[in-house]
Image 1: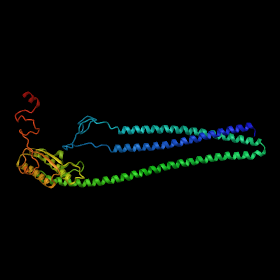
Image 2 (image 1 turned 90 degrees about the vertical axis):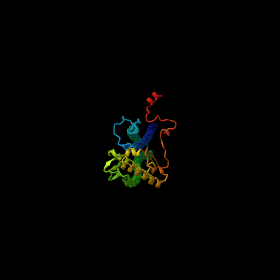
Image 3 (image 1 turned 180 degrees about the vertical axis):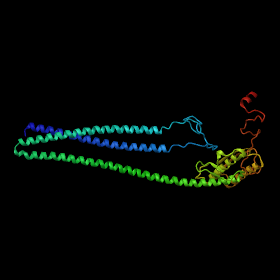
Image 4 (image 1 turned 135 degrees about the horizontal axis):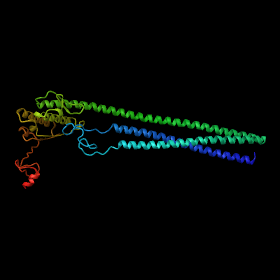
Length: 385
C-alpha cells in the first residue's frame, strides 16, 4: 500500500474514531436527560398529591356561635372576612403555590424533552456519518488489497475482520444499553409501588385509629345525652318529655325541637341551656383525659330569666340542689360563678365564697355609684359635674 493510501486510510480512521466518541457522548447525554425527565414526572405527581391532600383537609367553618350556640347567618360580613368575628382574613395561597410549582416542573420537563429531541436527532445524523465513514474505510481497504502483493492480504483481511467485529460489538453495546434503560425504568416503577404500598398501610392505620376514636366519641355522646335528659328532668321543666344531644352538631334537642327553635317564654330556654352546660361539666369532670371541655361555668341571674312564680322558684331551688350534689361529688375540681340577686337561703350555707355588690361595695373599688335615680350616661354625668 502506498504512503498516500495509508495517509488517506489513517485520516478516515481518525475521523471514524472522532465520530464514535461524539456518538458515545450524545448517548450519555440522552440517557441523563431521560433520567431527569423521569424525576420531573415523579415530582409532578408528588405536587399533585400534596395539593389534593391540602384541598381535602381545608379548614372548618363555624355554623353556630360557640358562646350562645345560635346559628350564624350567611352574609353577616363582607367577602374575605372571618364568618365568626368579622376580621379580615389573609388569602390562602396554598393552591397558587402548588400551581406555580407545577408550572416550573412542567417547563423544566418541556426544556429537557427539547434537549432530548435535539440530541437524538444529532445522534441519528452521527450514526449515518459513522456508517458512511465505515463504508469508506472498507472500500479503501478492499482497493488496497487488490493492488498490494499477496503477502499483505492476510493483514488486510484481519483489519476488515476487526472493523466488522467493532461494528458488531457496538451494536451489541447499544442493545445492552437499551436493556439497562428498560430495567432502570422497571426498577423505578417498583420503587414507586413500594412507596405507595407504605402510604396505603399508613393511611389504613390512620383510618383504623380515627374509626376507633369515633366509636369512643359515640359512646361519650350517648352518655352525654343520657346525662342531659336526667339533669333536665331533675330541673322540673313543666313542658319536658324527652331530651338528647344531636349527633351531627352536638347541640341539645328537646321534644324534637332544636335549641334555637325553643320558645323563650317561661324561661324554658334558660333551663335547657343550663342543663346542657351542667351535663358538659359533669362529663368534663368524669372524662378529664378524653373530653376536653372547661371545668368552669358562669351563670347569670337564673331566677330573673326563669321567673318569680312558685313553680319558677322550685326550678331555681332544684338548680342549686343539683349544684350542691355536684360540689359534694367533685370537691374543688371545678368552679361555678353565679350572679344572683336573690339566692336561696340554703345555698348561702354551702357556697365557697359569697360576694355582695351594692352601692357601698361596688364591683370596681373606688368608683362610687351615683344611685338609682342618677343617670350613668357619661355625657349626662359630665354635665352634672
